[in-house]
Image (cartoon, rainbow, N blue to C red):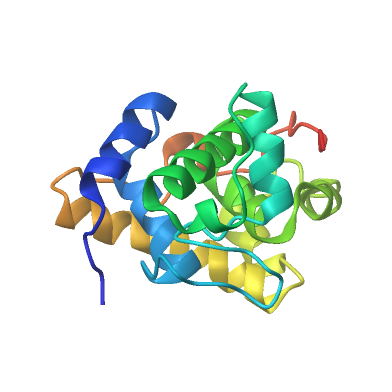
Length: 176
């Protein structure tokens, strides 16, 4: 149920982005269940389920060559771009994983609307108020899977860090 695959690719991405390996694996488990050939009805592709437009946007901003749609099925490319995108979201949301995970799933504009009235709200309450069942369950799963992959990789991870207990006052606006 919780495969540990593509470890070298995840280790490279974790080092480059400074994100914990268990977090990257948790997002991948939720996005594709580690199926490198996964393709969603929304046209998201590969392990970390990147839309071609998002992959091009990340590549452009990191001065990389834009990947072809077929290249998004290559683990090294997909994990590299997906990890970079997730790192950017975490930076915009002050390292609050629930907000970044919600944005990864539903988009930054929606998270901006959902947090507008939530400043200071306990994070577990905010998660329960996410109006989309898919996104609410997505966030819960990523948090739980981060703990599981922390155990599997012997890199313990919290469900929520101390800095994630409340929606912060300065959640940044969507930049895309």
